[in-house]
Image (cartoon, rainbow, N blue to C red; front, side):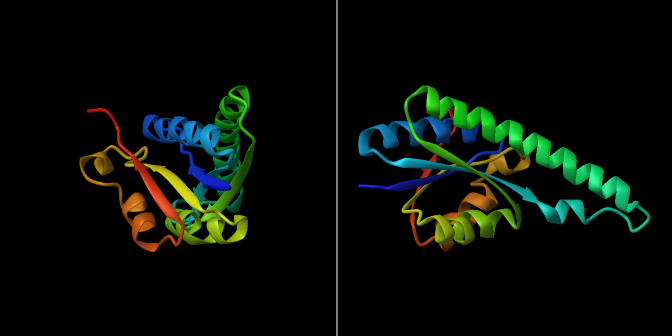
Length: 148
């Protein structure tokens, strides 16, 4: 069925639902989970030029620490339930990393993604990252809905 399932995780409730769904699929198919958290570097470089390089380094370091926490939590859940999981901490365009870069690099044949992420505004409609992934990914995509 599926060998490598990509699950983007961001710490949101909906990415948690996607992870649970992916774990169940992995149990049924013997798949490996690839858990990814992408640090959006666009947000880092949108600070005023007066921001010191030291402050930017601190900001990036904090993003990396938070990313590691999110990934470790997700991996521990998978391992606890007997599923092989690898974590990836990437940076750049979240949409491109999830839709094409990571799937190409890790031979992903299914992406399991939450309908929306952390952004409250995106919860009003299909999240823009999710919509992009559905349109651009060559792998199959399963979108997991939130409970209303």
